[in-house]
Length: 495
Ligand SMILES: Cc1ncc(COP(=O)(O)O)c(C=O)c1O
Image (cartoon, rainbow, N blue to C red):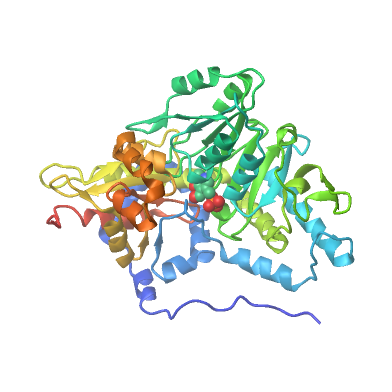
């Protein structure tokens, strides 16, 4: 007997959001969209995504949401859920770490997902392995804790790394390696290639040296050159490319670029499932890692009596315990979806919208001529992604607290993100914090309680406001964002 499972109806009562959704676009919006389409003609080629927005993501408009936090987490298409649920309901799936019937069937699906990940990134299975992790941070930790840092070795980072990459410095320092940051420089907040080259040239032949940088900053949207990968490798470095914010809307071709390690989170690519990430590692680079422990699933053999263990070769030696095996077919389905749409189509769409959004925000001026918005990152769409980081300023030029702007956006059902987005270096350069500003707080850190520490750094934890776009984004979303921002023009300062 076969059972048909249905996704439970989780939608809240339709009123009043359906009224919002059914409201015809204002004349203002219609005219703005016509002008946008003339200025960004490539957008027309992404029309299939409008159809998906109306079907797969209908909940956005039905509930009146303007979702602009795709770098935080992408949204899943409804059919991803249906497909996954049907697969779950239609089979009997055991833990893959065994050789019984249901376990073998599940192992096949796990390996199929692994192969799909490699295919998606055009990574040759002869060169790369895909290791499933709980998220991008889990992938980064695997590298950090196993990397053979030692005195004489180095870890080179860019200022705009996510905290999950910054955290690698704790492993490096604990093993006596030198940690160096390449600064990002205003106004675009890019890291200069000259500064990077200087640091790459300063190395001890034969010592383990790791360059870790984001393909796309989750703070500024800056895309650092992938050409740094061969440059660094030729200079004797290994490269860890943090691709978590890059791959949702950009092609990463590992047949062209050959970073030693790449970390990603799948929910950032297609929203569902959460809780699964991946470390793509070159086989040769994986060999250089030394795991500090072992766990169930990672070993070919372990003995209590003999007091020893033998690590499994390849990916298995790095997948601690049981992977999220029931979620992996959903990863494969998510990748299929991106491939069916085409990552280039997604890229074109979000970049047209980003270009318009930046232009419009930068054009907003108070009556006295002062700009409303300060942008942190490139003002054009060259070498950047669909992440726009700003702060709002009142007519006297005073900063409006980004959390207050976020709160007011919430009232309009617009999801922006306020804060530092786990990217303290980019925030500190953008907002002009100096080492001296922070040194005093950190010098006393161990004497202070959590509350006292927070009080001591009061004022230095402000951040900025991020709008980020994804495959379902459309003109109405960015228009709503600009319209919301326009509402701050010439408002009486709150002091
Ligand atoms: C650039 C970048 N790297 C790493 C991460 C960490 O990802 P996760 O929280 O999924 O581990 C994020 C998350 O926002 C990110 O944006």
